[in-house]
Image (cartoon, rainbow, N blue to C red; front, side):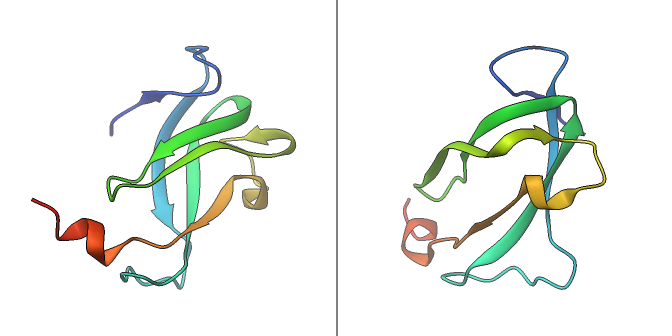
Length: 88
């Protein structure tokens, strides 16, 4: 599993994964819910989706707990772009 520095560059906080929310199916141009996972707490993360879009300063009021049981603080929605997928 790849570990990526997250949360203001503090190395003790790691974004280790992003997964589809249970019941979601990967599809293009459809809003899909993703759950972040890792270690530590942070106020925001930046995500490059690889389809030409970036989520900047995604956060939850208060602090996001990447390993806690409250997944609502680390669940986000993104629509993967079909047009971006066709780029060379």
